[in-house]
Length: 87
Image 1 (cartoon, rainbow, N blue to C red):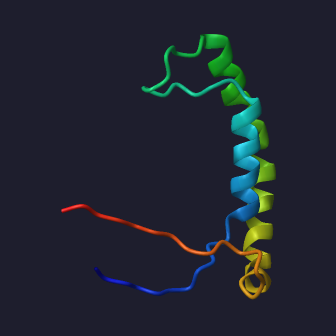
Image 2 (image 1 turned 90 degrees about the horizontal axis):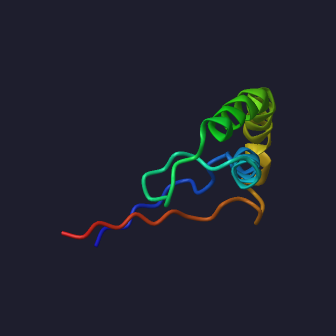
């Protein structure tokens, strides 16, 4: 087992939270594991809403990057990532 330690914070907390909120309120994506495909109206609404949200997401990404030096030093930053591989 190998252990590699690096800087723990990846500055996408606000952006990821906003995308999670969008995913929870918008019509579902066309994902292969879902029981049925979304209709054309749902796909159109989702596409337009994501397009409309893009400027806000870009602003949040900028805020994430600006706050990164501060949030790295607090307990509020993301902690770690585990990557496992089975031989």
